[in-house]
Amino acid sequence: MFVDTFNPFDNVLLSSIVAAVPIVLFLLCLTIFKMKGIYASITTVVVTVIIAIVFFKLPVNIASGAVVEGFFQGIIPIGYIVVMAVLLYKITNETGQFDTIQDSISSISQDQRIQLLLIGFAFNGFLEGAAGFGVPIAICALLLTQLGFAPLQAAMLCLIANASAGAFGAIGLPVTVIDTLGLHDSVTGMAVSSMSALTLVLMNMLIPFLLIWIIDGFKGIKETLPAILVVAITFTVLQAIITVFIGPELADIIPPLGAMMALAIFSKKFQPKHIFRINKDEEPPKISKHQPKEIIYAWSPFVILTVVVMIWSASFFKALFVPGGALESFVFNIALPGTYSEIANKAITLPLNIIGQTGTAILIVIVITILMSNKVHFKDGVRLFKNAFKELWLPIITICFILVISKLMTYAGLSNAVGEGIAKTGSIFPLLSPILGWIGVFLTGSVTNNNTLFAPIQAAVASNIGASGALLVSANTVGGVAAKLISPQSIAIATASVQQVGKESELLKMTLRYSVALLVFVCIWTFLLNIFI
Image (tube, rainbow, N blue to C red; front, side):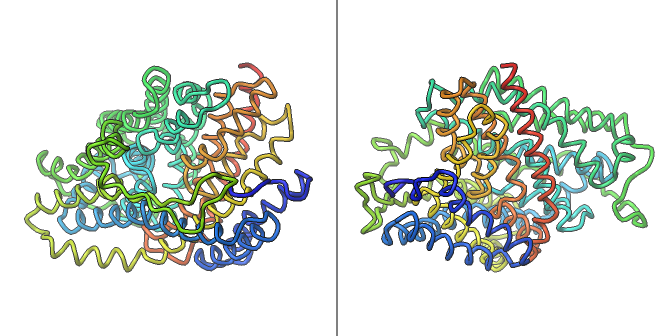
């Protein structure tokens, strides 16, 4: 925080209500007023600036710095990642690899319910673990549209499915970041990872059932029950084992791969009696047969992506860029002039590390993919980049404004005020604990940022009321995952990836009820776990 207090009215309830105005306003702009994401975010920025400066006494120079920082982080790393992810898709589509991927998935089953489990759930989870930051939503939503799903429907399904994987995105970063926070009672990332085996188990089992129910009701669940159970049990059991005995880093890598392999093997013996198509009059497309080497080549960009991103996320690689590291000279920390605060004892600093960005990792995969192809050359890559940029510049600007809101709320103490307001509930706090995480991810679009903001509050309250710190921090994570369905950042990425920019409010309406339902479920489950732990 860059202010003296997050309770300017000397009344925690009143301060938290005023602090929550930007959150409520943004939701109203998207739902009731049906504004496009860009206009909703600009409106909310203006109101947030007024509240931050007038009521919470945030200095104007700090507010200006927050705007600059929000735009900087919206472009690097988020915009960089999104553009590179979409460009990778466009190149694999141009090379014909994407068609082969579609055929390889369709060859497992032409039933769109099975395809949804394979791509929307399992492959989505795998990409979340390998890259995170919107990559799985961007790629998997595109895949589903290519297989016959309606664009907004595909985006919605991928957002919902991502709830099972969001806690351990980008090689477990949302949980591993906990070790940097110095929490009360020595709450560690490993402790939270182990606790997630309890907090996430029911959600992981539920999501595959929910996906099938959305597109084909209880009839669909009945017809595909064996396949659903194979995916749900494989994913849930493997993730529980890994989070308890290994840690969070591979919790979204091995389980989804295991689920995909298990379902592929199972589908050789089991197929639904009726082949389901969303468009009932539509005949299942004829599947082109491919040689194993063609299938391996088609999937190679995503295999390489996983390997490269895992290297980029590894501690030894990150150590190269720290002070004293071999690549330290490639890191630039730009302190914004006039933003030093004696209260925070620091200035707003923009870290610029292009080599270490996940977007750069994806760019390397793009270069390798082009070099391996006989159909696409670098001039084609430039052309496709221009196309991707034209499609994505508006959503990226929208994301920038959303991050400005987040920075303003953080630096002015609005986030702390909201958190403290909820924390005053005392012994009933475990029931409401996930709401903090839900708010955090709604604001930032990131479970990592959410834990950075609210995990200290969760751990402190747990110590005061005699609850498990690991449980409440884990609840913060899982509650945050439920908010990924409606996070403006996620919504913007999803609409952009399926070329439905301007329909953010429509997609939000489609996902909101599921987000709230999952949040209520997580709240009740956390409260019950707190009683017995």
